[in-house]
Length: 282
Image (cartoon, rainbow, N blue to C red):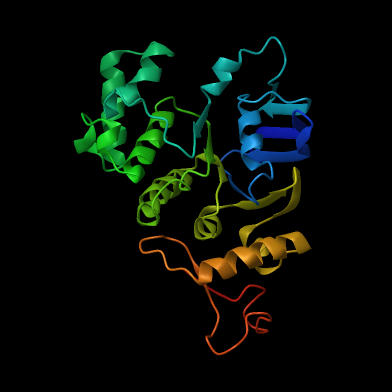
């Protein structure tokens, strides 16, 4: 596999606050990397640095073999190769769904309108929203809007997709429809970095898990090793609290997971046969 993104010693500050303190990672073509961690740990900032929505003070980011912060690099050209989906949908409210999809290919790539419209309609059919082509964002559910936002990014034929907690603003019942689109992209071989707390998605689709906390990569492993044999005490602490909270809540329609502890025993110590966080069911 070829390397799509390479990050070396990445540092980022906001004033006196150092948000990233030396991030090093590589992402291979076709790989799905899932990034988790507490709020304020630096996950979203790292994504925004990758496509240069944020400038960074120190370090290097390569797209394939191109060092992105070199003056000779046309960053707008490389942003077209990196689709990004945000927590909020950021659709243009005064434009219809199909207009939202067609805008960038027409204005940026100067593509043929008929070709762009056909591509947009095909994408809407693929995500099950053909009938919404002439609708406005206000008439769509949150899950539908986020599916449209993903499709808008795909209109530019990106080589890499960046997802910044794409389900965090959704009602729990709408999470599944967005994750299903992302799963389909993964099955088709799309290279992806996904910041999320959807652990079921991470285990099912991810090739690699990364925990970022306090601006550093605390742990990096396959999903199986990450969940069943975490090496860092911080990973055990973060996941343990997250799973215990999740096991006490039932979200109808959420395609996630459930860590189940018997009602008649304390939660402090897991059984020898259940792994560090309790029984995991999908």
